[in-house]
Length: 477
Length: 137
Image (cartoon, rainbow over all chains, first blue to last red; front, side, top):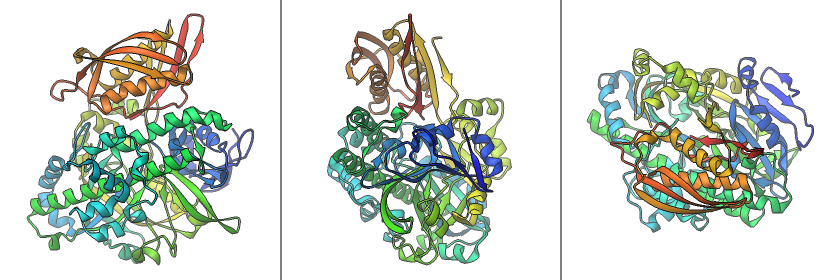
C-alpha cells in the first residue's frame, strides 16, 4: 500500500481502486511505525469506499485496528448522497470522558487518599453485570433517552451548570425513544449510574503541568488541584442499539445497491427512513451516556464529601467539560470555501471546536472547546483545546486517548508473575479493579504513549495542549 | 481444539472450524462461552428454544452467536450446551441449555459485549467449514 508522508505529522494514502477519496493519517514517525504492522490502514481504505464520503477518510494518531471502521477514525458524509453507519460510531455510543475540578489540593487529600479510593470503589457500581442506584420506570427511562443530562439533573443528580459544560448541553436533538428496541431499553434500565468493565474507569488526579495558563484558567484549572475523570458510555443500551441496527442494515444495504467491503460497514443513506431511525436511536443512547456520567459524578461528589467530611462549598467540585468520542453528528462545516451540512462520524475521536464556534457554550465561546484525553492508568491524562486548524482539516476533530498497542492476550502474558497494583502504588497511583484480568489487560504498557499521541495532535495543530493530569487513584471496572 | 483465539489489538476473536456446518455453529458457540467463562462450571439447568434467520450462512452464524450472547448480556445466563436440530442456508433451530449466572460460583474471564461481522465469512471445501469471528470486549 502506498503511504506518502506530507509533513512531520501527516501521511496520505492516495485514492485508488474503489476509494472515493484519499485517506489521511495524523501521526508521528514514532507512532506510525506501530500501526503499519496490522490491518488498520486497510480498514481506513475500506471507509474511503463508502458512498458520499467528503474530503478524506481520516485517522487520528491513536488509531488502531478495530472492526469495520478503525478506532481513531473520522469520516464525514454528504447529507444528500452519503450514508450513516452504526459501525462507524461503534457499539459504545457516546463512550466519553467527563472532567470535574475541585477546590482541593493534592496535599490536603493525600493522607485520606486510601480511604477515598476504597470508598469510591465500594460506592461506584463497576464491573461485569453491575447495576445502578436508580430504579427507572418506562416513562422515566424514556425521559433519560429523550432529554439526557438536563432531565437527570432535574431529578437531583447535579447542577444545571454541569449540563451547560457538556458537549451538546448533555442532550442531543432528534432523540426518539420510539426508535429504541425493548431489548435495548431493558438492558439500559438497570445500568444508569454504572461504570461497566473493560477500559472504563474513574480516576482521581492532580493538575500536574499547565502548558497554557490563560486557557487553563478559563477552564478552571490550576497546578496542584485535585480532579475527577470519568470514562464510560451508554453501557448495554448503546451496545444493543448498535447491534439492532447493524443487523437490520446488513439485511437492507444490499437492496440499496451500495457495495460494502466489510459486513461491519453496513450502512444506509442518511436521508432514508432507516438512516434517520438509526440517528434517532443513536441520539437516545448518547443521551443515556451523558445521564450515566452525570449520575456517576454525583455519586463521586457524595463519596468525596462523606469520606473527607467536608461541605459542598469546601469540595467546590465543578464540571470542566464532558466530551463524547463515539458518535455521528450532523454539523455545518466550511468545505472548499462554502458552508455544508455533513454527518461527521467520530469513532474513537473527539470533537475539537475552535474559539468562536457558535455551538460552544458561553463560557468557552472565546477560548475554544475543552478536549479531554484519558491516558492509561499509570501515566497521565491531558486537557487540550480546539483550534481553527481542526475546523479547516479534520471537521473539528482530534484524538481520543492513548490507543491500544498490545492485544489483551499479549498484555496478560506480559503481566504474568507481576503485581501490577504494587508497581503502580510505587509510582504513586492506587488502583482498585473488580477483576485481576482487567488489571493485566489494561496495564500501562498495553497502550501507546499518550504523551506521544497528544504531542502529535499538538504538533499538527488540530488541538493545543493546555494541561496534564497525573492520576493518584483509579477505580477500574 | 477446533478453534483458536485470534490476537486482535483492541478486541478478541476466534478462528473456528469443523467437519460439518452444524459442527461449526456448535463449536463457535462453545468457543465464545469458553472465552467468557469456565465452561466446566456451567450446568444445563434451563432449556430454551431458539429459531434464527439470516440472509446467508455467514449472517446466520453471526445472528446465532448474537442471540446466544444475548442470553448472557441481557438475561445473565451462561450457555452449557446446544443441540442444533435444523440448519439450512438461512434458518437454524436449536435447543439451548443454560444456567443463570451465579457470581459466587461462576468465573468471568472476558465480558464479551458484542459479536461483530468484521471479516466473518464461512469458507467450505470438501468436508471442512471455517470462519473467523471478532468480538467486541
